[in-house]
Amino acid sequence: MLISTRGRYALRVVVDLAEHDDGNYIPLKEISSRQEISLKYLEGIMTELSKAGIVEGLHGKGGGYKMAVPPEKCTVKSILEITEGTISPVACLAKKENDCPRKDKCFTLPLWEDLNTLISDFFEKKTVKDLIK
Image 1 (spheres, helix red, strand yellow):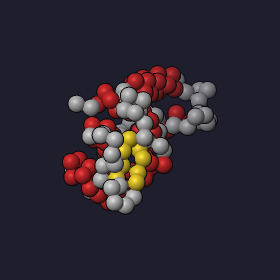
Image 2 (cartoon, one colour):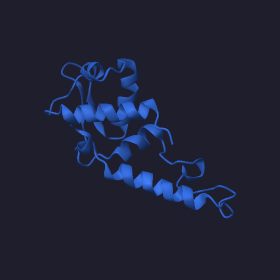
Image 3 (cartoon, helix red, strand yellow):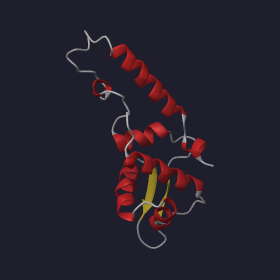
Image 4 (cartoon, helix red, strand yellow):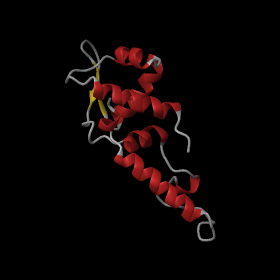
C-alpha cells in the first residue's frame, strides 16, 4: 500500500485546519502558504473533503474553510478513504465484497486479510487531534 501525494496532502490540510481553528473560516491561500502546496491542487482536495462532510467551505469575502467534524472524531482512515478510495493492501480486498475467482483457493488471502485489518484498525484509531502538535 502506498499513500498518494493527494492523501498525504489531505491529511496535512485537515491537521492545519484543526490546528488553526478559531471558529472562523481560514482562507485557502493561508493554508496553501503554510503547507507549501499549490492553491490549484488544494482546491481539488478541499472539494473532495467538503463533499464528504469533513470540512465546510464558504465562498466570497471572509470565506475559506473550517472543520465540519471535531478533530477528535475525524479519523485518519476517513480522510484516506476519501482521497485514496481504499487503503487495502491488495486489490481483492479493495471492495466490500471480495469477488476474486480464486478466493476459495488462495493460500495468501488470510495473510492479506490480517494485514488489511491491522491497517484499517490503525488508521481508524488515529484521529486528527492525535496529529496536532
